[in-house]
Length: 109
Image (cartoon, rainbow, N blue to C red; front, side, top):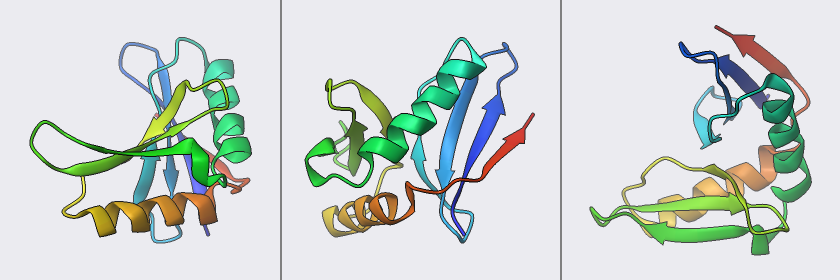
């Protein structure tokens, strides 16, 4: 079952990963100053992650495809890992769409 992993960094900031049922990270957030902001980011992924138009497929400077998830206001709320092909990145988008509604949040140090 999918879940969100909420982490506190060494400098006291917060971030989260959306993990698929196999524990693979499928979306990573930015760093947040406060835990409440990171939790709001998770809510934003839940609200926006199932909508096709909120995903943008991109290519890194090294030529690797990846995607970002944007909120309605066009702010990026998460990005993927680098993929080996555009098809693999599109599969990642489908995984986020399927798993974004996860309700479990696991806090890790």
